Image (cartoon, rainbow, N blue to C red):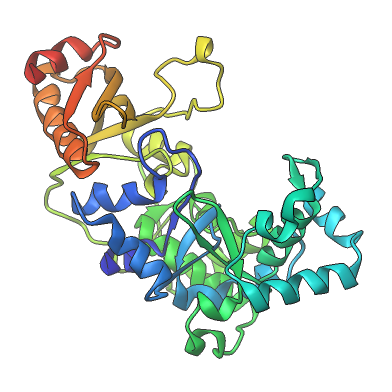
Length: 363
């Protein structure tokens, strides 16, 4: 697990729980069926990772916290949140901060009490908005409860003291270090790919990528079929063969830059969670299936916890693949995932061009 975080730097979090919380899936894709409580321990007991805004809300290696202090010192990326924070009573904000530091971890609801009034910001009340602002600027930290509710606390409770005491680098130096991390995780990508990994300011970071290439920190390469110049990490491995077999979360870092996935694999993926059901092409929570060095299929998955079943609500094969071979390998991964999620069975719904072959090997 530590090796995965060393390679990726961070893992995105998301509230959707139709299958399992998304931050658990990248480790399953790479390690197989592991004990999910180990990730919770890594974050909330050992404090080797902490939650903050990396790509989006993410679990990030704690030693990277100094590299993100420029973000904590900058304006909020959400214009509405920034304008709201600027208009607030600083005394009230200070009082709320003091309450969190004294009583945290504590949720917005616990601080609000029974008389909270919700405003227009996604239904958040003033307390929640203030806490989110304090979290963004690094004044408070956060942990997650079993309900996935964010509870706020003193940052010293979630980031080791040696990290907190580490000197704050210059913003440009911090961004260079983050770009090196991006390149290490991706191996190869365009400047846009690398900049998006930690959601860095595009104009500044593009210039830094070019400077890193000039200094030999990145290599400049041309990739056949790519219209933009590419950059490769000097230590990027070149395997003799690729024998991957994994279901991949839509929130996995390998899937973040959709254009990169299409350029690399010829695989077009768009998440359809926010698309009306009648307009979805593949389904609500669709996981690509990586086999060898190619994405060969995609499946819409759901955990039916009441009946202890992993529901394959749709299964689609990519053009030109052998359905029987793909179905056989996919069935093994689905069984593995069901066992990992403590589900007793896999049920295939007859939707998608791969569903018949998958049903044949499942029954």
